[in-house]
Image (cartoon, rainbow, N blue to C red; front, side, top):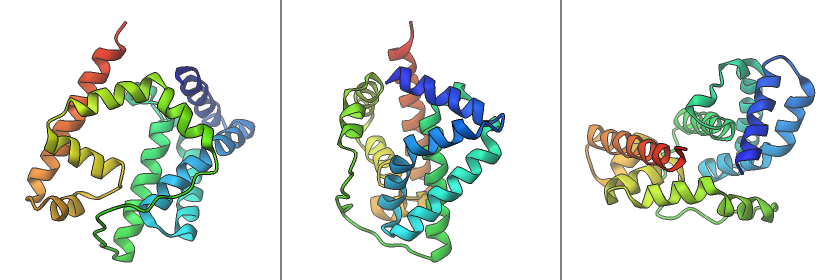
Length: 184
């Protein structure tokens, strides 16, 4: 998986130089993954498609802002679409509090297999399970289910500042753990 991440990183760098072929390759490779994130968060296919479109526009305009020291290009793209989805949900005033996310079929069976078999996914899962239970739950709800801090506070029945602290401390712990696991 690291080779795929390196390849995607170089494609984003080429995209920052207005390389249309690199942009097309990124789109073909990552659009379904990003659509899945947007759809899971919004549960609205048309809105999810719009968010992916906007994310790719942002990639084209701002590819030079990508910094591989802060994470892989795939994580950067996922973050872009996640923030767009949160903004869209805020704009539409949707504040549903679902206890479970519906299962969404993914036509690319090999994507999940690749993810599960990657060293990065195994490292992330190991580090995630090492967090304090409340930090782990807050991080999972925020990044896997796409809940905003306000939604997290409601779901976890905790003050907003406390929830923000749980997420921040959880992410810092994840970063330290992942740095230790990937250090040469």
